[in-house]
Structures are given as C-alpha cells and as structure tokens.
Image (cartoon, rainbow, N blue to C red):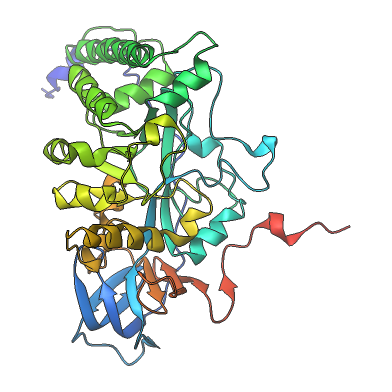
Length: 446
C-alpha cells in the first residue's frame, strides 16, 4: 500500500499569495579586474583609521585591506601615497530622479498630491534614470542612495535604494535585495498641503490620519492571517480583496519594510514613537530631525537613527530650534547619526557637510575622530537602508564601493579622484571620465 501524506488527504483551496517584489532589481555588475590601491590613509567607514594601508579588490569585492597585505603581481596598482581612501558615500535621503533637472513642472514627480495617505505609490516608478544629477553625485563620491517620495503626505509612499550606475530602466539601478522603505511625514508639510483640501489641518489631524491608516492595515493583516490559517487547517477559504496601499503598510507590520519619517521637532518624534508602539512596528530613522539632540538618549534606547543636515535650519517654524552641534551631539549620546543631503546640490559635497558637523562638535569638546564621523556617511547610512551587511565599510568580503580622494576628505580642498562601484571604475577625475552620461545632456541632432 502506498503511503500518502496526510495533508494531501484534506481538500484545500489554492493558496493565493502576493508577490512582494514584482519589480526586482536587474542590476548586475560588470566583471571587474584585480586592483590594488596602495599606501593611502584609509577611513574604513566603521570608525577606524589605518595609515599607509592598501586595499585589494577583485570580482566586485574587497579581498584585502591593511598595512601588510600581499598584492599579486598581476594586480593593477594605483599609488595612493598622500591620498585618502574611504567607502563610497551613501546618501540616506535623496530625491534624485524625482525632482529632476531641468526645473520644469513635468519633472516634479516627488509628491502624489491627491490625498494625504498614499502608501500605494512607489518612488521607483517616478525615477528618471537619465536625470543629469546622478553624474554630479557620482563625482562627489556617492555610490548608493535612498530615493524617497517627498514630504507632502502623511504616508508618501515607498522609497527605493539604488546604486548610482547608468541604466535605461529603473530596475537596472535598484540595489539587489535591499529592503523597501515607507516614507512618512509629520509636522507642517501635510497640514500646509491638505489643510484646505479636507485635512489634516492640525497636528492632531495628522495623528488621527496615521492612526486610521494603521487601524486599516491591522484589519487587513488579520484578514490575510485568517485566510492562511484556514488553508493550513485544510479548509476552503477565499483570499481577501487585494489592497496595494495596505500591502505596503502590512509590510511594515511584518518587519519587511523600513520606516523613514520626515520629522523636525522632538515632541513630534516622541509622538511618532508612541504611535509605533500602539500599532507594534519599528521606526528605522527620523529624517531632518533638527531637534534630535533634545532626545538623543531616547533615540539611543529605542535604536532609532537620525538622518540630519549639518546646519540647515530656520526656513520654517518647525526647523527653528536647531543647533550646529546636532549631529555630533546625537552621536556622542550613543545614538545612530547620519548626514544626508535632501538636495541635488548638497549631495555633491556630503563629505564637507559631515566635516562641518564634525568640526562643530569638536569646538564644544565632543572629541569625535574623523574616522568616527565618516561613518555618518557610510556604515550608519547603510544600516538605515538595511544594506550594511554588504556595503558601507571597507571590509573583506563586502562590495568594493570605494572612493580615492586627493587628500583628507574633511578638507574643502580635497576632491574625489576615483570612484569605484562593485570594483568597477565609474569616475576618474584625471582622465575626465564619468561613466554616467545622460542622453538628455548629449543634445538633439537636427
């Protein structure tokens, strides 16, 4: 007699599942050669400085780093004497490709202005891969970025992590296996946008909008859980009606999608933390966060990062109570600090933004090293994007995302000389080489 699995004896409905990654990355790096950069001052991106060190890269990975590594005779050698070497910079808050140049209304793709709750929209579906700003960012040492929707909405939609590489398709820029993000916004922007369009008009209206959305998500999550439990029990079951907006929010509740919140004031950050506890989800980072210095201990306890400017403030009321020492004060309290751009211009000089924050901290006696401060652009940024296992620091086995600087990257006189992504040379200042050449800038043949 043939044995039959018990589960096959119970009639079951066909299981209906949702494809959680319907637009997967198609990026695949070119095969890279064996390259050694020697005798440079290395900032690992993880808080360590190594003098007179060398790095060895092959097949897209870092295979050696240190003072006494063996360099094969067939490696291409680049003399780094007098130069500095760092991981590629990661911009944890970008809108490149959404608010593109030239500045024209047809290029303003960052906000879905139609209603305050739009988790169904995905930033990647508005990215223009030919945006000229990508090449400028590459020249500033930017190898990876989180492209987020704007901050007009309570829930602005999904963000996407991309590699700063040339591509015709959006999927060709997506960072393989990077988790999705959700962009939320508290404070003035949603009130200003929707105050005369049915609301929210107040901070309490903002909070009510979040709670309603999470309540709906919880109910939707329970429907799917009931459906799956019924199938496991061998019962016939009808899957819930699909809701792509709630799919995103349930992804947060299931710890699959990272939460990034545009939020300036300490009191509102506290409210958002309380909200996350009410509905049982995790906040990854507050963005802009000009008052994070007031609650740095809380942020450290809750393991929430702050992605901040070095010194932007005062352009609206919620950004007024800022201090230049915000970034280093957050870091000094053991909380996760990140320096971001939020600007197509500032992204070109993020190393100088981190340098300003580092200098402001040391002026008041915080005594943060350059090696520690550079992690604000690299490993800490990689952590809030969920990609720190593969990039963000110079470590054996990680992606060879590397920048060679003419000098100390904390000096305004230093420039990027070479930028590598997955071990491939993407930018070389001396040979006037930049692999990202937008078709838009090539002109029109008449």
